[in-house]
Length: 261
Image 1 (cartoon, one colour):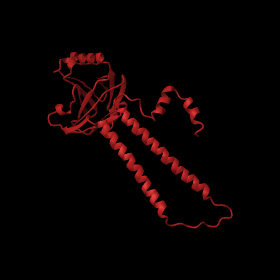
Image 2: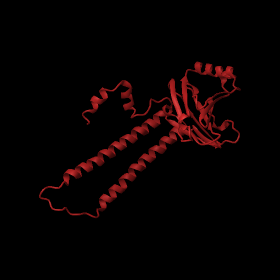
Image 3: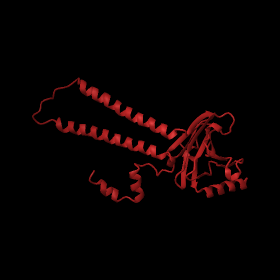
């Protein structure tokens, strides 16, 4: 099987090869991706090491202790303290190491970028904003998304425009490439979850709460976003398209929304 691996890789397209190199993760499009990629690779490495060790023990036991024609019934062991300590302590060590790196990665991904406050006014909490971030208010409702662009400089700094979606028509979210964006998430009905796989980040949208996070889109393109929380009959229709574009295209989109009223 291992000998066939180079031939399998050679027969793949360039995109398939990159997908294998990323261990099935999508090509990233945000600055949050590096830490998640390292954690994902480490988890795969740990799984491979444990897998090789376990399968090695199984195969060794099968061949070392196989019954031969002249064998009598082997001695039955009921208790072996060293082995019991091994299969109790070893998994705990593996879990503890994975837990530690998961917490560290979560801390790095959300450091200075995540905030949760009561949603009492329906407005963006000023404490959730960071510097010159673009402010986008995300409302998840059964079963579509609304994106509001808050006080954008391209609109004079005191005007907000929005895209409203329906279950029958996808909403479009426009973001400027290589510029920091702060998302503020709310819901008027049930729990949803804002997820763009290429961002390597998702966050729940909870009624009565205002969750915020900040990231920087790093690659132009169109990416499919979705709700990652089962929210009712038409959950599967809660899709939206994310357009990461140049600043000029972003400003033009906001101007078009303003002109459309």
